[in-house]
Image (cartoon, rainbow, N blue to C red):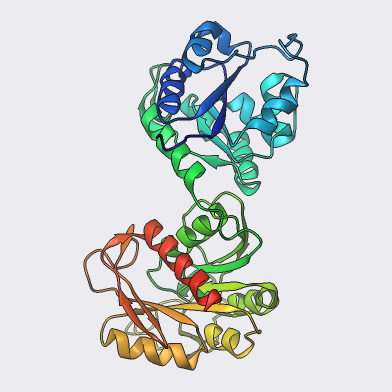
Length: 401
C-alpha cells in the first residue's frame, strides 16, 4: 500500500531546464501509489519528449488543447475534475503570471483555471526573474488565493548565476504532495482568527517600544489552519514573514490597532488563537518630533498600560466560541498561565518558558504546555509548525467537549 493509493495528481510541466527533474517526480508519485496525468506546454516539449512522461505515468501526455482524445470529453475539464492535487513543476514566471491574471491560452493554463483541486507550484527561474517586482506581486496574488509553493532553492543555476531560483528536488516535491494529499480537512467550514507578532508603541516619529516576537508561531498556526480547510484571518504586527497561502492578512502596528481589529472581527469567528505579543506599556505621550539628546543625555519616559486585548476579547466571548491564548514566561510558568486562563476567560492557554533553549523568540522550535481548567499537558521540543497542528487538534477537541 502506497501513501497516495487512490489519489490522482495532474502534473503541469512548463518550459524550463528543470523539466528533466519532473520525470523523477512522476516516477516517485507512481511509486507512492498515485495516478499521474501530465500536461506539457509546447516549450516543455523542447526540453523533454512527451513519450518520456507517457512511459513513466502510463497515461497519455496532453500537449495540445485541440488534440482529439481517444474517448470524447472536454479534456481540460476532465483533467481538472480528476485531480486531487494539481502540481506544476517546474513553474516558470510565465505560467505564474498567467495563473495570477486568469489567462488561459494553452492546455495547462486552461486546466489550472478550471480545477478546484489544491494547487502546488515548484518555481524555477533565473534569480533576477524571481526577484523582479512583477514576479513578487504575482506570487503574492497566488498565495492569497490559496496556491501553495515549494521552493525555489538557492544555489548555482543552469544559466550560471548563483542565487534563488533552482527548483526543489523531486523527493522534496513528492514529500510535499504526500503531506497535502493525506492531511485531514477537519476544519472545513470553521472561521479561525489568529494573531501574531509584536506591536510597536511610538516614542517619537522614529523610535518605538516593542518586543522580540518574530510572529513565527502565529504564522505557523494560520498556515496549518488554512491547510486543514479553515477560513483564516491573520491579524499581524510588523514581522518579516510571508503570508501563508489562502490566509487573509490584517496588518496592525500598535496595541490599540490590534484591539480595534480584534473587536471588529472576533464576533464572527469560531476559534480565536491569540499568539501575538502586544506591548504591555506605551509612552504616555509620543513626541511629535524626534527626541534629541540634551544635557547629560538621560531621557525619562513615563509609561502607561496598553489595553488588555485578550481580556477584552474574553469579556465579549460568544456562545460556541473557542478562545486560546499564549503565555510567554520566564518564571512560575504554570502559576502565571493559570492566572491568565481565568482572568481572560480562555478555554486553553499555551504556555512556554522562553528561557529554555529552543523555546525562545525568533526560533523555529518551541517547548509548550497546554493548560485548561481540566488539567495540563507538557509537550516536548518540536517545530512551531508541528506545535501548530497540536494546538488545532486541541482546539477541535475543546469544541466537542
